[in-house]
Amino acid sequence: MATVEITTESFGPTIEGNDIVIVDFWASWCQPCVRFAPTFEAASEKHDDVVFGKVDTEAQQQLAAEANITSIPTLMAFREKVLVFAQPGALNGTQLDSVIDAVKALDMKEVHAAVAAKQAEAPAAE
Image (cartoon, one colour):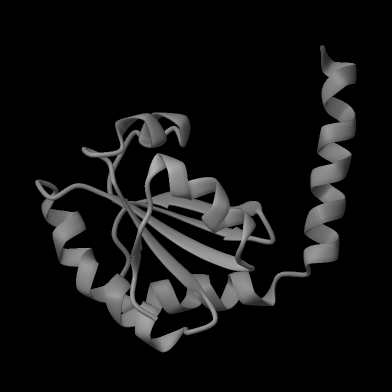
């Protein structure tokens, strides 16, 4: 599967409509971003069960701000609508494959239970 461009408008539907989504926040002027692009594209060809999206932080400044992007490239991984990985910096192919494999291997019942527990605590903290 090739990478898809993600915009402010398509971000939510992309995350909500797919099991696993890997998002690369990048900019054309960022040399580490440019060097990471072929690695990201190669992974998208290898993992056809994962959606690979790219967010151009220059064109999608509102989305980058909402995602708290302070450094690029930043990679985020979502599984079943839950952010399960976020890290700035370019990865090599082996590192990216390791992240993808780890996301696929997550026990999502456990992740959803942890998210629910954290949300239950939130009102008490106010």
